[in-house]
Image (cartoon, rainbow, N blue to C red; front, side, top):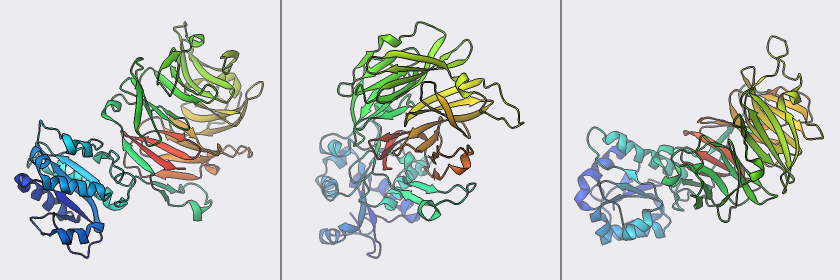
Length: 469
């Protein structure tokens, strides 16, 4: 290992076997030219006493893994020292057709390895930039980062600031600027999805107070509060294109899995699926679209494909006894005023989701080429109480308190907005209610869900990120 001038407040140590010194030094020189505080023994030199005296300044250890590295007692001491001191470890693989085993595998098995295999002059910069991105992020967050110091899996493609930046949108009137404008929230936890959960990853996600449920690689996967995969269902294949919605049902203490033609219950303790026979659709021209639950009811939206007609259903829980079926177009009435001042015929072109809150449902649908959130109060006959126009196809996550929502795109995007819903005010212009903008992910947001009473889980690219709401 090596030293740098003591004036630096933090630095990155390179750990490697001498047989690969030439390549490692080339990486070191490139990163040093990018003004990163890296150090290496052939450049600076340091003895054990000097190293121990400055170890509090070490922000991370980069280990260049090879069979020789794994067999080296000195290299093992480097890694074990970093692990014992809580120093984040960044692992790079530089030889093809080889994987670490033994002590090295135990330390690095939770890490997404940076691939420097087959590195050459043509691809050198592209490969090393992935390491550079990771180091930049690590220097920004520090050695006590909840992402790195707990050996969470990380991905170089997602490096950059993982904080949520709240800022007031420029088009809105000033509102609580002192407390809202440019607030930052740092992640509490961050973990890359296992490789088995990255193919055919659905944008639909839901949570209970204890579990996070996603669909990937045509199967359902359950994660705990530490964002670790705890079990998967391998018995029932649910393709991404077939999955319509997921929701947690507190009455049944089960997840509800909605596909185009069937409804399943999933026990989180076993991850086993059971088909709800009451809802097995025999009409090939009717499909399930979305679902949500209250403490006593299950609410469903279906679509009659031949006429593109959407229906609202509700059922009593836990018996699934049918209560009513209503055409959603009839519930809207003549509320939607289009730009030319004439009323539209309210033909629903598309509908994406339904969500429950405070004896109300929010339904996101497309009418006259525009996307809206329609809010209905649930009485004997659902009554429309408010509408909001959106700037594109979106989904919502209802937070705590339930008047705060996250609105995010139903396609890969790098932003979302937080909305304060004012149901006491009859004003339907969204500009008075959209209070906070959340930006700067430098990644692709797939889904958002409330986890427990106050945590927010984001599915970004191939990772789960946990924030305090």
